[in-house]
Image (tube, rainbow, N blue to C red; front, side, top):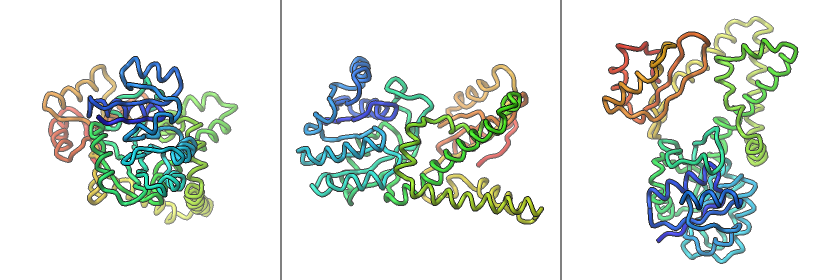
Amino acid sequence: MTTILIRGLGLIGSSLARAIRLQDATAHIIGSDTDDTLTYALAQHIIDEKSVGLTAASRADIIILATPVSVIKTDLAALAMIQLNENVVVTDVGSTKRAVLEAAQPLLAKGVTFIGGHPMAGSHKSGVRAGRPDLFENAFYLLVPGRNDDESVKRMQTLLRATHVKWLVVDADEHDRMVGQLSHVPHVIAAALVNETNVQFADSPMALRLAAGGFKSITRIASSDPDMWTAIMTTNGDVITQQLDAYQHNLATIETAIVNKDVDTIRTFFANAKETRDALGSEQAGNLPGFFDLFLNIPDRVGALADVTRILSEHGVNLVNIHILEVREEIDGVLQLTFATETARQMAIELLQGSFEIVRRS
């Protein structure tokens, strides 16, 4: 029997607990969180036992730290002072890794195995009630081992097999640079755009009503938890500020081109962006596992979305994700279908193209 301590039973921690339960019914899962959360988790059989703080850490074979990065750092320091099982594996799910790996050094110095982790999945919902075992399905799960320890990585991957994630092993600096550019900076930009729009239209409520379509689509992530993003800004600050500097330089360049009516520079600016955006996709990522998207025009009529899913279901074509893009109002919408394989996407194209207009595939 494997004993797992999960510190933090919010969306991520409770989803991991549920997935572990699916993978290994004999696993003994100990939860550490607030009393209300633990009471619910026990009642729903998400966990088998509750722990105050890290008091159960000495009995655990696997310790998962699923709290904000600031708390993870504190817990790593505390774990370094506890006599842990000889073969214990400690991991986390924090969205920055360099700061976490630095905090794990005292633990590593004692010979304890630490593997930084970051499941690249989430939801607009939060808390233990929002957790679900399939939250991470087909998402990337980045691993940052504290030292070369293939056996411990395999142990962790086996434990979390029911998550059905796509594993990638990276180093801490590479991780923080990637998520900085692909996640952290976009969140800053989205929040800044929303805040500035609110200022610009303070005297025009009608204008905010028009802020739909593309504006809502590109600023959706501005609705994220402000406490979490405050912690991210402080733990990956060096990377984020460097990337923001580069972004602001780009803005200054296009601003100058607009002022000077420099048509060539303006067109190159948008052409380069289009080329890069259109090239995004798994076929551009070498051997990295990825997704295959299909975009459809879907008419505004009752049952249109159900028709799409019914056709795919009847022919056994599995969808990884489905998303209605908020790019237009009161006319046909754009439906984004995501598949795990190119074969599945090609089958979907053949099945749907007679009934729906295919906008593009990428």
